[in-house]
Image 1: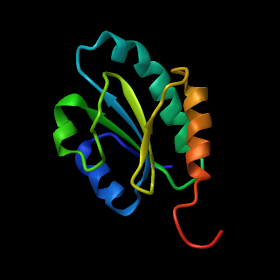
Image 2 (image 1 turned 60 degrees about the vertical axis):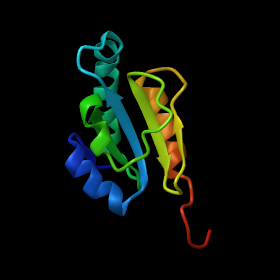
Image 3 (image 1 turned 135 degrees about the horizontal axis):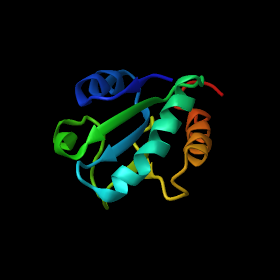
Image 4 (image 1 turned 180 degrees about the horizontal axis):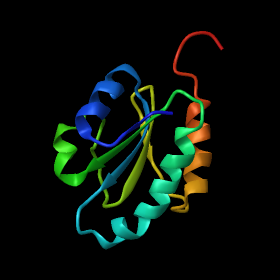
Length: 116
């Protein structure tokens, strides 16, 4: 899986592949600082995985530039899973790299079109 750590590169990739896992962070947020080591572990594990999803990391001050849906935002940090069909789901489970990998595997198993 490919990882994009800036909004411009993410937008280019998202235009071609709507299936994505995106972490939204805000500078100076204590919860974001606490979650960042698990997010980084997740990215490292996911990078070696197969699958069609991409991974993005977007800072709060760049959300208005993001091409993915950032509506109905509840707070930071937020991890969103975009299903490739125009929908998304915020991660509500444990904030661990293993839980994120499990949800990413589920995302990668979603059919986005064509024959089954």
